[in-house]
Length: 111
Image (tube, rainbow, N blue to C red):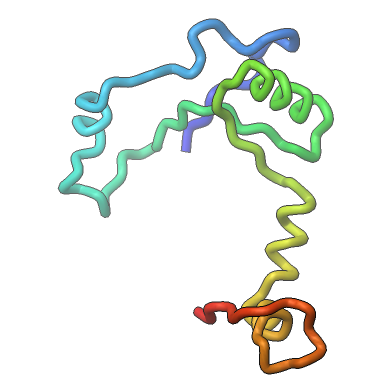
């Protein structure tokens, strides 16, 4: 992947003209729909990615949010913890109504 360069971001505001739009014809020319198993290299990412655990990057993400602009965040501790905790076994033991001690009702779908 090739990501946008965050070093050029102004700490006070998102860049003018963001998000950078591209017409669908150009996207399909670069990666034809009949070639889904052969993506272009590198895949050029248009959205900024911010590390939630880095206070400076988190502040930038908040500015994008306040400006109602799209972005992605990664390294969010709560999401990482949920991914570790919410296994199929955890869901089954906490949501199957076979156990009369649980407060929840219903069934989880096992994969």
